[in-house]
Image (tube, rainbow, N blue to C red; front, side, top):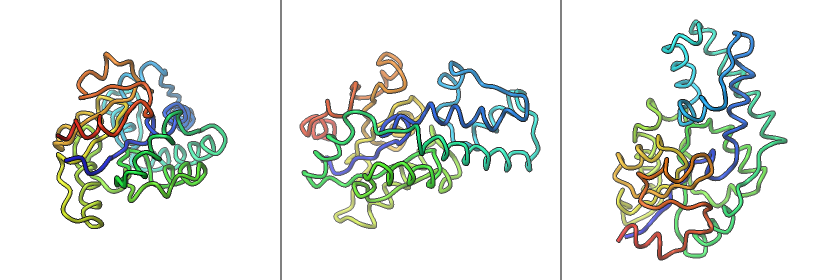
Length: 226
């Protein structure tokens, strides 16, 4: 039975993926490293900030100490917040979808590899924070997507607020990347992909693929969880 929607954030609610890309390169500049947009979307988009820098180190692209990583994380966060105050906006179709869910009393929550401060900044700026019961962010999990840990934690938080217990199979996850879709499927949740970051053929593992969230209607969600 359909009971809840869990949203990814970047690339689903807000068009902030490009802002993360720019902020990463701003932080990496002092190390003489620049990631191409093509490589970012192909290899790194679904990673948390910490996992992103760790991945660059493992690929021998970035040479950095633990102290360097702390500095890079701080610089990236500051750069992103600066960019988000002027450059981010809510993706077309999102508000209509949120309103439909609210009207039907469907709980909504966010599970993202972004930092809570980044998520809260954009939600409050857009005045849509009140739609979401909870937020599960990068700081709260040991392993980011495609690991299901974040989605399972998001469900656990919902079940502190609602009875009877919401099952994984009662949840629909909205994602924009294969990392997120893999995580949702590992958590035994249903999946919808939106083509904000990747073409439909790259998101074929999702149960349903849409071009914008307002294309989704209540029967679509109920049928997924039937």
